[in-house]
Image (cartoon, rainbow, N blue to C red; front, top):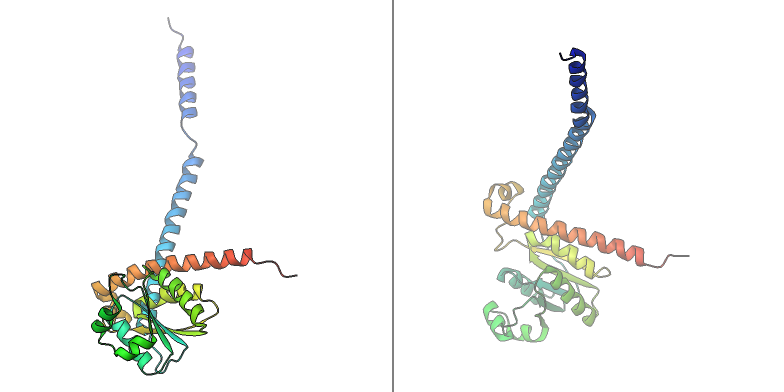
Length: 238
């Protein structure tokens, strides 16, 4: 005969083992809290990014060049003939002494570029410099900074497309912290024209500004990191 108590004790022992192998409810609750916190954080980040994109689009839409900008020099970033044409107009109207076209293709000759732009030969010959080293916006800023130092200029007019201006300003102010940079955003030939609502509802313009916004955030983070490093590397004042 089997002892009923032994069977009951075996069941109790088996139940105890089973409980030992299952996690306590507190752990499951803690995992849910962490999941909720991560989802909430992700939603907050997404909301901040979307909100930031709206602010960025509004900044692009509201960007307008000064009616009578004046500086020592003009820097124009390649990427559209309209940009260079506007910069040449500024130079022709006496808004600055010299013009740097940065990011010119190494295969493009000086005369071919002048002919393509239908620029005044005498003006182009005397007062226009070509930079051929830059391959991106940061490179444009570095190339311009070297030119500004060589010319001993204290101020420049920066010419580029309206959607490209916010990021360009970050890079130029990082490379030229002691030089006055005057933005001259160009809308001609830019898909990002009109109001902020127009940009947000036009697929081509929205895609363009969204990509530029992502690049802008990277440039901003790089500038913040650079400023932080420069501040920490600077000798402490007594």
